Every structure is written in structure tokens, then in C-alpha cells.
Image 1 (cartoon, rainbow, N blue to C red):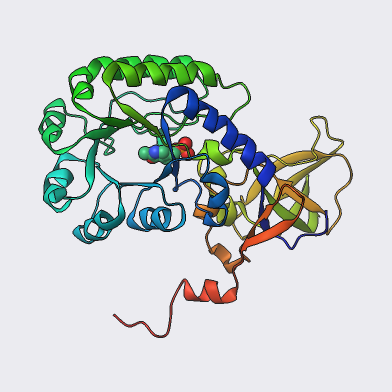
Image 2: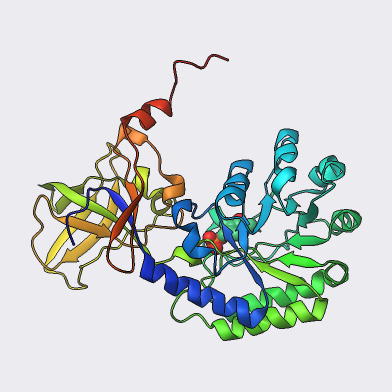
Length: 375
Ligand SMILES: *Cc1c(COP(=O)(O)O)cnc(C)c1O
């Protein structure tokens, strides 16, 4: 590979197609519709590659909903933990469905949503998540309606519902059990609805994921209640498709060999830091002879991507490819320390690399103040 300007998030088109094909097979076998969760991945320059496999987008805000409508098209679902009345005015113009997080939001805006289908988010009180931070059913959760009488009150105003109760779930048996609990608990409501979105958080594209069994469960559920099921994959659409390509700028030693690269975990792979996970690297070996800590160049003391055993001694100028850098990375990148922002590129199936995005000093400066604006 010719030396790519770094840092760069490099998406692999061939791997993306593989994920898309796995998802499309589930769609075909289950009858569910697939909506890309933009909060996970929103590099819209490659949506043309995803469109043939998926049915539209789902969102967490007005900007995401608008981006989905403008760049992906097909079906646009809007959801927000809390809409402002300004949001509703704009969103109701182009959205196919508006999903409300609470009964009070639904009651407040229902009459304004004349040409849009409305839904309500239900918090089923059960979930599959290894992280309290991301657990929608955590104690005192504000995500969705918990009270049965509130759900009952919402019914005349909605034709569907959303339940998001998974996070990185590869366990189809666990999913089945939770869906059975939900089916029983909300039976009377499910029978009244036309559609339900089962949210995201399922690892459809992992190698050992039992997609046939999963599709069958969805199909049965959908037939039992006469529901159109929607699935909202985020992470699964782009899992294992992308590297954060970096260059080693310095090698220092403090009881350990430390390679400092031209990126930062806090600025460019923030999710790893938040969930206290380590990055993994290409071309490392389990029993690597040459062990290095790969660290970022922000001034955060623990700006550490992780450790890897490399086949050779690292040199200044070497390329370090950090694995799995698509989901929840580009959407969270920030200007901490004023570091050069990674560009976004795609390696096409024929090997050609196309640039999707590139930021400059001007973008950094503009993100903090502009001279024209005075409130
Ligand atoms: C986060 C989220 C998703 C996407 O989740 P992934 O884990 O990326 O698949 C889908 N729907 C809702 C409501 C979400 O909050």
C-alpha cells in the first residue's frame, strides 16, 4: 500500500459489503426492515453502498434525522430523548415516523404530527448490556416509558413502538428470552400496534452469530402479533470494516517501550476510553517479541490505545493500524489539544483509495468561535 497521509480512518469496501450481505440475509429471512442507526456511523459519503441492503435510517436528533433524509433517503425514522417544539416543526416535514420518548412529549406534540406516523418508546425494564453506562434499563433510566398506564394512554395516538434493550449482544438465546418476557408483558399493546422497532445492539455480523435462528425468532414474533418489525443496527453494519491508520512519530521508554502515534484515543477513538477498553492492532502477534505500548499524542497522561506484540522492532515513520475504528469513532471525534483530525477514506474493492473527508486548521478554529456571529 502506498503511504497514505495519516491519521486516517480507512474503511474497507469489501468488508463493508460482507457485513451488508449478512444483514440483508437476516432481512430476507425475517421480513424485518433495517434502519441504519446514524448515532453509530454517519459517514454519508458511502451511503450509496449501504442503501441497496437497508431500508433507511434512524436518528437521535434533528441533525441526524435530516442527514438521514438528505443523504440516505428511503425511510426516515426520528427519535429523540427530548424534542423541542422547533425540532418537531422541522422533523415532521420529512420524517416517516416520529418516536417519542415519553407520554408527556407525545401529548405535547401529537397534534402537530398530522402527516407523520407516531410511535412511543417503551422501556421494558430488561436489557442485555455489559456496561451500566449504556444500559437502557439501568436504575432510574429516562429512556422510554416504564409505566403501563402511560403506555395505555399513549395507544390511541401511536401505531407503533420502539424497544431498545440490547448492547453488543451476540447471544441469540438471551435475546429470545428477553423478547419472550416483552411479548408477555406487553401482549395487549402489541396486538394493537402495526409496527415495532426492536432497536440496535445486536452483533449480527460477528462470525459465530446465529442469524438463521435470530431471523426465525423475529419472523415468529412478527407473525404472532401482526407487526412489521424494524431493526436498527449501528455497530454491526460497520464492525471490523475500518482501521484508524496512524504513523509512529516517536519512540520513548519508561520501563516499557512506548510508540507515540499521530492520533489520540481521547480525540479519535473516545469510545474505547469511555468504556475502558483497549484497542487492537494489525500485524501484532500474541507472543510478540517486540512489545510496545501504543500511545496517542494528546497531553492526557493516559492517552493509551493499548499494547501489542509486534513482529519487528518499531521505527519512527512506521504505520500502525488500529482495528475496528468505524462505529462510534468518527461521530465522536473532537478537537481536543487542537490535534490534526484524521481524514476519512475508503479502500474500494479494486484497491483504489478515495477520500471522503478532510479537516483543516480552519475547521478547528471555526468550531470554537467565528468573527461574524454575535448573539
Ligand atoms: C444505540 C442505538 C442503536 C444502535 O445500536 P448499536 O449497538 O450500534 O447497534 C439503535 N437504536 C437505538 C434506539 C439506540 O439507542
